[in-house]
Length: 76
Image 1 (cartoon, one colour):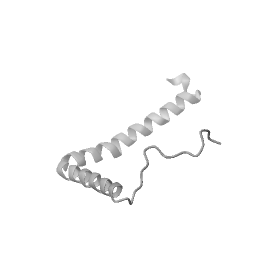
Image 2: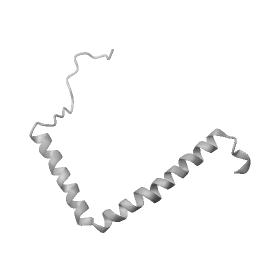
Image 3: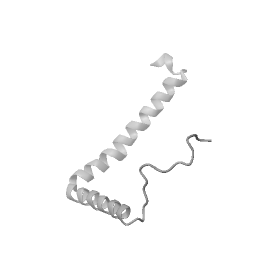
Image 4: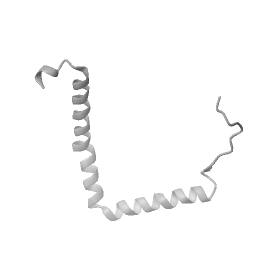
């Protein structure tokens, strides 16, 4: 590793790897531990958000078109 420190790709990979490990250790892992410790609350929040999103779609507040009508066969 010592002689490749001038390579920009190696330095970028190390920077990205260190940042990813920092995120996993300091943010994601504690969040996941808290979510698993409160698993019923986590599940309840998920189900509530699912019901809310289905209600927004069914009520017409949030519109969704699976195949929209296109006025032309070609994009300009």
